Image 1 (tube, rainbow, N blue to C red):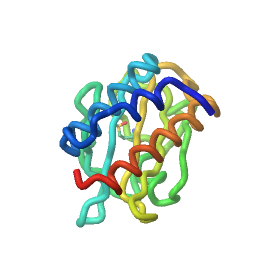
Image 2 (cartoon, rainbow, N blue to C red):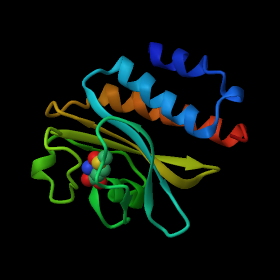
Image 3 (tube, rainbow, N blue to C red):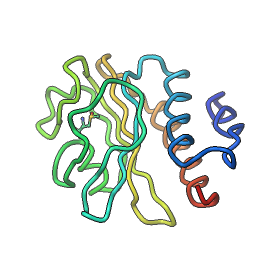
Image 4 (cartoon, rainbow, N blue to C red):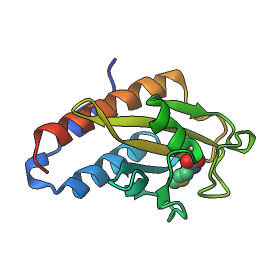
Length: 153
Ligand code: SME
């Protein structure tokens, strides 16, 4: 698999970035390559057992903390697998972040093999996430995991 997004992330000078700067920059890079993604951000599993929003680009979300049995976000971390929802309005699990959102993908993120959070992306286009998008984004998450594991950000 080849995509310019990988080089953009590889080129980041991670030693001179804080953890949050690194994560925010990756969301900006994702949005640069996929302009139809309207909200790109991370949630991290904290010690209270809930998902807390991390760096993101897009409108302010009303869901800063999400329980694991709530939302597409909770489902992806609980099942530890990527979830694509082509029509969020047809999915009863969906927690609305913005009225414009029509589709969503959530990819679990692991640190040292343990579930640690996720990358969450919304689009105002229905069924915006193809299997190719999924493969690219899963690879991006693997790159982010490696940085979070290797560099003491
Ligand atoms: N839609 C998500 C909630 C997070 S916002 O999209 C940023 C969900 O259903 O879990």
